[in-house]
Length: 637
Image (cartoon, rainbow, N blue to C red; front, side, top):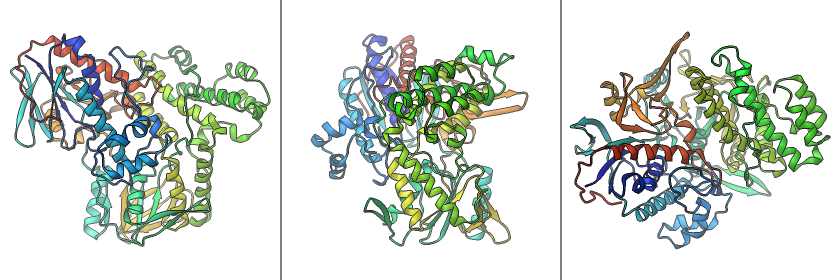
């Protein structure tokens, strides 16, 4: 007799959750055998984003030493640990002895702890981790993999029946949805642009996962407008330049781009008008002190005279800012006392007394700091081009190049380790925000719009930007005339007069015209607009629900799939929660904070999230009568 679990999705999210399930299976199921069925149209472990079949030019956005799949001794979880090497340790110690493609061995031989590995190298680490998982828990569970797409899920006679695109189906006791990012229908604006492009012979590429896109319609040498300057843009830039035969040469310490002649002329604009801040280019460690120090439930209650927060910007953000600045300044005083005029004890005693935006703190900064570059100005950090007006597009190029160069230089200079402290502090702030959310002080709209929207956008811009070498490449492409910066608050439209796409920013009075427009952005998570057949079928029957809420301003939604906040069970349209169905991932409410790969030795929240959910699933399995006879694996991976 055995118990069966079906996991829809077989990428990193699913595999890391599976590890936590297997780790606690024996203790919760009393040694009873577990059968696990993984379903994914893409290869197991890598899934869609980390599959082997993609350009080797695309990199991870994390340094090799900053990624692990194994919960180490720092991780405080209820289930047992499953220890193993970090990505860097695996590259250094394991890859030379593995049967992997020569290209992977060569990349590994050139790597260092601070290298940003290719995604296909990360795929190999994922695959190795998955195989180690199978070997370690071979007596605990049988693993079966169906390389197909799940198109429906129905409860039949108390069991969950999973229907696959290939026409087959099978029954399990419990189902976990872990598909990763879902594709959605184009937005109304995108549909309009698609229609106009078809009517007038233009090229328009809506939001999508960049590595999946076909850029054949983008012609060599032609102007192409690109909306978005984040990580999706970086992938696009690589594929349209190096991916078309261009290359870089280091000439006397300066990076030069050698064109192949097949590249288009890329014109990029966004709300900020600059790329995300560079990743830190030195070993970060954990320089930040323990925070939150100021972001507490009591502190927020002292700022409001209502039951809930009514203005995140004035009632919560200043506490976050003060915590992050505390991390910044404590590291500055510790690492660079020669750049200060007073002792840390004197600074801290005054700092503790005032709100972040109090003029007394600006006076304190002016008194304490010798270098204006050491003053932390969040508004300037977030919107570096705000208020800028130049006379020409050429002048704007020089301004943005200077900004990028300064950001790269600072992020690769350990004398500015206070930046690393802010990075570490941002990671810790998520824990503080979790406690605030659980307290009930934040309304659903505040959580959706201010935390998952504005704050997470700020976090991504400051702490989750591109590898430093990518900024050097952006500089080189700009100097080579392949890349042009449009500026901030950029607007992209269709001109009915000239029947082409047009764009401009607030920084310069120049309108740019092009035949092609690309949206360099990841699609928003919108459950009710997904094209995923499984979710569509469940929605139509009321068996899942989007995260809708209502306040005095009306109805609004996060676009996420609603689950029980503690158990992870799927919410149904009638307000009840499914007994045997669970979900996790970036498109699930509450899943955002656990997204991304864990950093070693940081008690990463993702492990705790996965451990709690995995044990909840096992407890549900344990509560059911065992009704299945164990069968041999259909496909052993």
